[in-house]
Image (tube, rainbow, N blue to C red; front, side, top):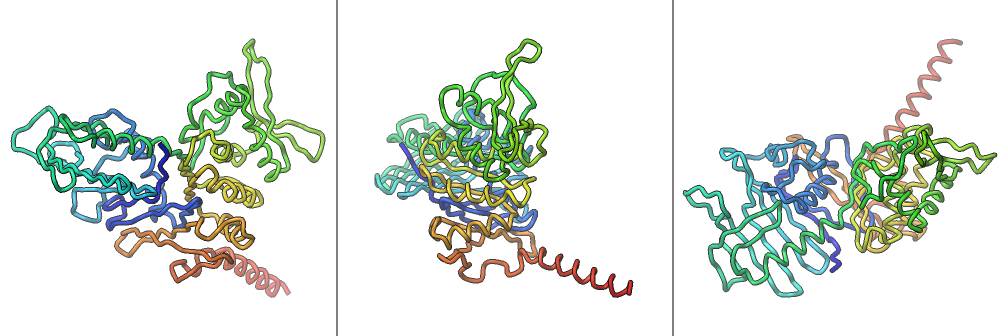
Length: 425
């Protein structure tokens, strides 16, 4: 069962007090000033993923790395008095799940206040509505179950994370919702902004199921897949050659009697002098998980319709290497149904996307660029900026001087130089 995500909506979440919707394209870029709310949007996906996959008694998995130690009161917006936070997951074809979570601070917990499911193709819809009683119960919570307009009854419901279990006949509602939620969760792959650097050398401990959020284990993942006969290093090495004029090399050896391996860069412009990735600086190590995730999606290793969420892929990269990164992002978008969401401040990435549009390597409908802004009250909003086939923004939602600082700094340098020369003469 493959289901591609169409959009996600949320209300009263972090600094987003009003309902916002992020419509996903093969490539979606999030721009905005610091603390505007970009990271909150990106981290909502892995937070929901972990909350679906957990077996915890609380709906939200606040132990998730995406929560960063937050309590539920930190997740829901502080800009309103509402104790609830809601979100909607919408798939291509019309299937959707909507959930509203409610804070119960006097009980030191939060609960699913309502859950609705709609399957347009199957013509089925149902919902659960929390119906509290005065009597405290350690068992399942009472919910009003509505199946379309014909069936309405009170049923006991237990949640494990965000997954419901209706105790009694529900016409298959629970099984379908669980399947759809798991389909969404399995598609989410997240890389946070600060990523772990590759070890200088290590012993192989086994191939991880996936690259972790902080990039740790990426070398184990690559080594294991390469040892299994998958050509994973070839595409990655191709990228390093384009970006740095060096190839990625796998080194093996024995250290204190233990077989070890490491990754290094070898220059292709002169006699190879392998330099361990640990010694190449932050940029080359920080980008390895990014390139590995993108190439893994392109090879089908992440399944059909993977959703890749990457925070600041350009972190610590020299601007000369950013075009190669942008080229890979554009090339990877849509491959095997991939949807890529990137949080970035990089003007180079934007320019590369515009160039891809002009050259016809990307279609305008394949790119979504959002500007995340804040009002004077601190409330955050999403603005979708469409670009035409010539890479020009359509409408007035793109801030006119967002990247003007570089030009202004250059002008200041010229003026200061002229003033100093004039004073010296």
